[in-house]
Length: 103
Image 1 (cartoon, rainbow, N blue to C red):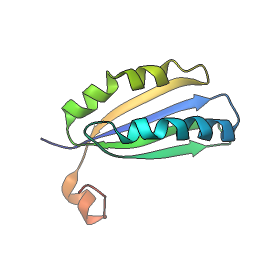
Image 2: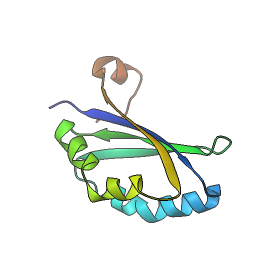
Image 3: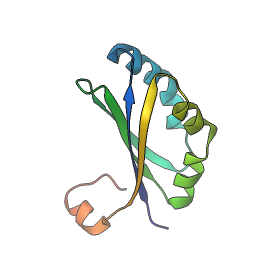
């Protein structure tokens, strides 16, 4: 069972404060995703882009997350568009050398 990374990027069409308010309302749902060890929220206000980096305990957890109603609701949100989701394997040994929070 190898941990997996999911990197997401998307654009948003509301003011940053409104985006952050929406994100804060969804944060508890993301925090309770089974098999997700952590999520880091990202934003580039100048480009009106946001995204996240997730660490999943394994590929099964990542795939279950991608197929979840939570992801479907985010992908269909009218304030969000241009989604790019990339799954990545982890180079564990080297990542641990650079203090990656892999547990």
